[in-house]
Image 1 (cartoon, helix red, strand yellow):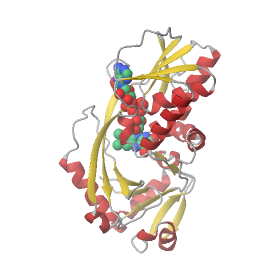
Image 2 (cartoon, rainbow, N blue to C red):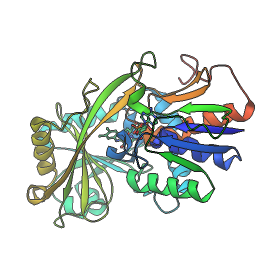
Image 3 (cartoon, protein in one colour):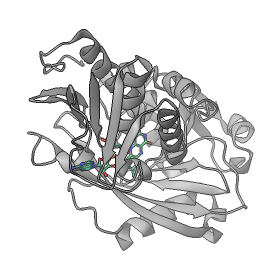
Image 4 (cartoon, protein in one colour):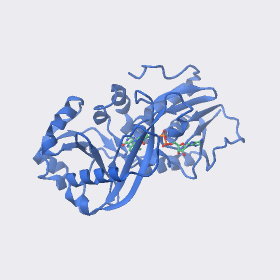
Length: 331
Ligand SMILES: Cc1cc2nc3c(=O)[nH]c(=O)nc-3n(C[C@H](O)[C@H](O)[C@H](O)COP(=O)(O)OP(=O)(O)OC[C@H]3O[C@@H](n4cnc5c(N)ncnc54)[C@H](O)[C@@H]3O)c2cc1C
């Protein structure tokens, strides 16, 4: 029994890893020459189930709670568990109350604690919400880590082609093609996400910082080498063309509001990913004629891929053929 995974983004690689560690033979193919080139490469890598609950269904929280543990086991040393800090400019302070009313798992913190958590933000904000149990990772590093772990386990990769390999007779095909499935998967739509990377040695952050704003909320996720991922827009379109000038201006203004040192930072990369999403913004494992698909990861690919990979592996191990996801089952 060999399963073919189509698509080596976060959905495909986590599915391959979960199947492989349960002893199922897996092969992985991707249209691109390397793994992780789709929307996954532009992700913030926040594992933030409590914060995401502000605008997402309860299932995102319940399914996402064990995500950091899954990643820590799969790619040891790559998960940073330092929580999330949510701030707002004084004039937008009411946004913090609104955010608090829609979430849980936080502590209210004042200026002193903000300064202890993030010394470079000392004196800049009077109050904030701190979500101590949240985590983050570097999407590019963990996808490379999964790829290397899979190769070490003997998993074969077919990269640079959309032609299904013919050497092996596959018992099932699992489609994890992200936004490429829009049009062929009923109900799947695209949500454009723009982001950019700033580089500066003038400021250090230890954890994702979310700046609330009535129109332009943003987050900043620290990475290695003095880089900061700044994101992300949510635009209802599957247009993956270059980032707009407006989005760049809004990101830079907001980053400057978090700390003026970002005004001197170098803008080293911009990117756009299309998030595949269903109407309720929840992902699904769907049964297909020749196997399954994992679709609709929306803005929770890294947070929810482990849960989807487990659902898929449970179904394949149990030899189930009924639809894994029934409407409402995730509620
Ligand atoms: C700006 C931005 C920020 C984000 N931040 C976060 C975050 O902080 N936390 C979080 O959890 N999520 C985040 N997300 C969401 C996350 O990135 C997505 O949910 C996730 O990347 C979707 O993964 P995927 O594997 O379904 O699709 P993709 O990553 O797009 O992978 C699909 C793969 O399929 C391949 N493919 C396509 N067609 C074919 C074919 N015919 N044959 C073979 N291969 C094919 C592609 O080459 C690609 O490698 C963010 C997204 C964006 C855009």
